[in-house]
Length: 97
Image (tube, rainbow, N blue to C red; front, side, top):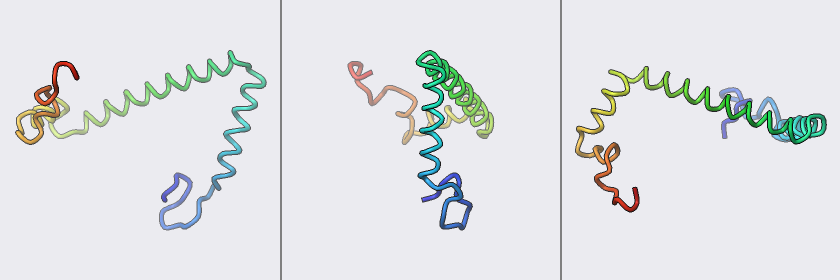
């Protein structure tokens, strides 16, 4: 299995799993100990904002890189009989929708 810390072609990770898990556990413990539950909430708020921001950036970059743009790509999917159901509700009952 390829790890983030495993270089291509290498068999062992640069950072062992136990060290990564211990680092996360220590950081979370210190954060809760010194910041309390209020600090934990603020960290979660900041983390959520980062995830949403980077997610929006990823969607924008990927859709911009599609040939012809996002609208053209969706139009191609809609006009192909094999994939048109992916962008419509033709195979979905009103109750399920």
